[in-house]
Length: 102
Image (cartoon, rainbow, N blue to C red; front, side, top):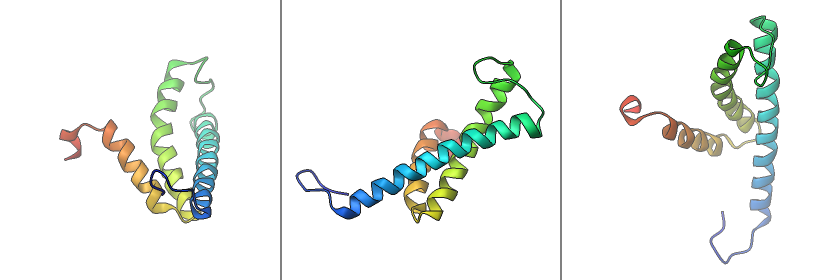
């Protein structure tokens, strides 16, 4: 990371390029595999926009955990496991109430 007033170093550019690649792979994988899970494994037909409501509910319940598990896996492959673990903890700590977390 750079402090204000410093130039970005080639290492920072490489870091952010890897981060963007990991997010792209993760988003695409989460979308494809969640649809595969719902359509093939559970035998449900539909989409997030055109229902049925059971499809929508299961889709929304499956995406976040699957997305973050995939993010950690792909981030680990690219050597950025610690960075993505910190991001995951930050997001989930905002979503889960303190009384449940602690």
